[in-house]
Image (tube, rainbow, N blue to C red; front, side, top):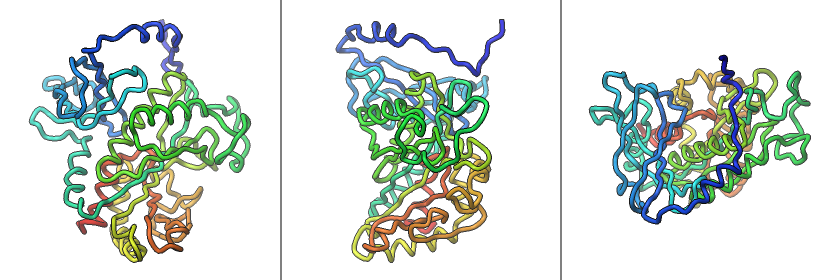
Length: 366
């Protein structure tokens, strides 16, 4: 028997609802532990029953899993520890059930290579007096179950880019059901989702998370990605975070990161923004290495200097310039206070790594 792995099977969701509608004992709560695997991009999950309603991650037990199956350990020493760090309401099971974001630790209790959160927490603690705020614009592409862009002709291409950005109409927008389901699920879960819109390439979308202070930006963004992919399961589609999913004359996908400190948000904060840009210019290569999980290799396909990007090899900044590395929004320039937008992070970036390097460069001078 031959199985076609590119054609995921789908089940009758009405049948599932029959079972999910069964009464759940009040003393039993399903906690889905979620973590980042060894790729630094993919998420994994499994569920534990607890006999209470957890209010704080510290109340939940440390758990473990087989790291040899997630590219994080050898079979002879495979246990990886899961440390709960953030709790969200579960939009899929409802009730008192929870989604639990976890850090991963090796047998020697040191963080795994894909655990970027621990270092991010340490940087945020050192910079907490500056109150660093983040907002990340997460772009992604919806694919059909055969990995073809959702809504695109199977033997051709849609019309050129132009009518799709923030578009409306079935001939311009593909996959809105997924977007709306994800948006409402994030609100229910307690994620700081700020908005969404159709992007320049058809079947490509964006949602924004923030403003979040400190490490919360990483927690909320990773959980929003999990929820998005879980929603996609129900619609039998695939979500791609590839920075350049379609070669050629099509926009890539980024995770533009908006950043500010308390000083930037106050009167004449533009002066502090300009100082930050000078520091970012001096550390361009370091940031490029941190802005995608493959040390710039994925982003090299996207940051070409075309399709609203800067070149990966050059640093630039400008007011309202979407072709620059750093954009100062026009309103910020006029009001002389606000934030900067770093347009270099890739759509598959680790937000913990992005937030950490920005704070180290701008706030800590490291």
